[in-house]
Length: 286
Ligand code: GLN
Image (cartoon, protein in one colour):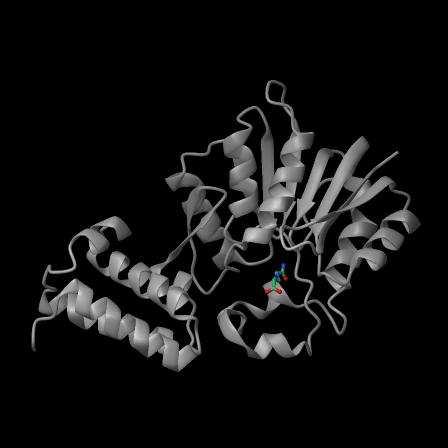
């Protein structure tokens, strides 16, 4: 094998990704850096500062394998096994949805509800990698966070994340939404990033989502089944004055508002994400 330098390797990889995935060169360049930084176990800054450094054969083979998988469309986060969310590093595998930047809005809104210095009982429905639950628990050490998911594989990832991030005030339960929860033990805040994509949405055939768990993305013909279930069941698990907050699709604001209204929530509000799309709706149990 001809030894190659980091600089040459990155340039070649960027050009391959531009062609294979039709990416902007700047995005392809960042992806190439993310993969090489993962293989070398070095920060990006190292790659940029040492373009003349030479790859070992083993590193070259590993990098080429990951690059070929990326060319076939596998998400960067599954190839490197991690994704940053709210400034924390989460393990991710194809068993969990890759945390999205827009979901940081759900965390921001939840944090506004959670006091710093007094305990609060919080439920995260469909926790996946645990990104939302663990971030809340980490930033509000007084809070007691319960996180449920129907997938034991997802819970195993979430538990590893809680452990790696040294978060003791979050516990994980295998439950299909509320199925194993006890109504006599109510929460003051319920949060969820449920599946909300319509089953026949053409964007499910494009990009990263093709590799993500179908059950974490879709919920019935219109993508509304999980949201409907959560809205209808949640009042039984909330204390009086407690709040529900959930993420939804950009075109699901009116449905979400009407639904919360119809099941008795008050102070209903919808919040836009950074892209200006309606993304999170919430209400209070009177
Ligand atoms: N926002 C995600 C997407 O459209 C969907 C995430 C979800 O279903 N909770 O790719």
